[in-house]
Amino acid sequence: MDSTEKGNIGEEFVNEIAYSSFLDYWCYPSPEDEYGDKKEICDLLILFSDSLIIISVKNYEFKDFYSRYFRQTIDKAVKQIYGAERKLLNREREIFIKHPKREIERFPKEKVANIHRVIINLGEGVRFYPFNKATKDDKFITLLDKEAFQTIVRELDTIPDFIEYLRKREELFTDKTVTILPGDEDDFPVDTAKQFFEYSEQNFNPNEKQSILVSGTEHDILASYLMNERSFPEYIQSKEYNGMFVQLDGNWTDYNQRNQVKAKRDLDKNSYFLDELVKREVLTNHNENSVELATAILSFNRFNRRVISNNFWQFYDAYKDAKGNFLARRYADFDGIGIVFAFYPMEMPQEMVNTLLGIALDSFCVYSNYKSKTMILIATTNEFKQFKMGLMKNIVPFPKEQEEQIRKDVELLGWFKNHQEFNVTEKEYPDGE
Image (cartoon, rainbow, N blue to C red; front, side, top):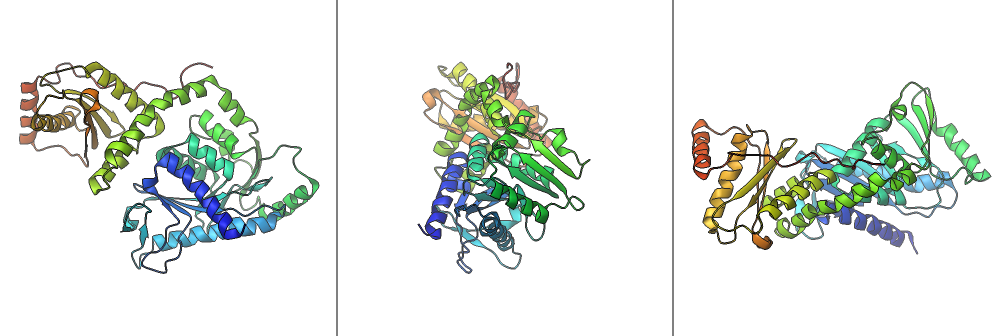
């Protein structure tokens, strides 16, 4: 098998994992500079809202020669990521790329506010490797091995969750030299130890940067983050010492054995209602409005998707057998993003439905004192015969005359006499051992 074929296999492996967790709409495999030099920009580009993730995948076989392996994988990947970022954010000309399911499109560099850089090495049997690197202009790069990427993306299977982990990982380890030792204590042959000491002499300089040795896998690091309420333990964050040895072996096993974690994963199954809703009801049309709505919905992390989905089902069950001309509504705010549920009986005329849904959105803006700067509407009828969905953005207080009319409409409809926001008191991890 030649290197090109191995590289393609590696890229396909990474793409499939990303597609299954993040939906392929936002993933650009091997994008090329379509109207430029036609060269591949990187192995995988993920562009979601204002966040950009540049991924380089290396699938060289590891042959127990560490310095050569690092040159063939990490050094080349660092150059690729540096070049990709420079090209994509080039101020001299526009870059056009192509998604496999869409026409050629302009890369919207003006929207990019957050950039994360990831190298994924698929070689197996490596007993030590650098945990992070930097481009030649000192931009942080996250390094992951095959199993680490697979586990992290499946455990943090929304783009917001994944980006949050990358961001906190970067904040903690920027300006530090970190090396990870993923093998067991007795899995360090003499030749490997010799190469490790040579590597240490070349890369560890405590007088310039804090040096950290991590005993454990990336899974163990992830477990430490999750068990510490999505933050890293304070002792890892300490800057008191020039050098540090951190032992995390077994954390991932411990995390997976906890009943709270098993219960959390079971409860999270309900959250995929929102993911499926986006796939089946929103992204069937790839126009600007549908993409904006899908992005707004998928901007929620996995836990908030669970809360929203559970409350939607409770709301639907309360009204699913209702008949007559009325509209049921429910609302809650999540850090400035409002979710409005609505139910209308199937026999209600569509013109009336659309009018009442508009009043519902406007009235929640007014009666919440414009708490939400964005509103997402999810409405349905008996037996889910039809979903109606919508998005209001950049909400500001309405003119006084419009507010007065909304209050009159609400009074006529008899709304807000017993108004309650829906439940947002769930815990991500249920109580218990």
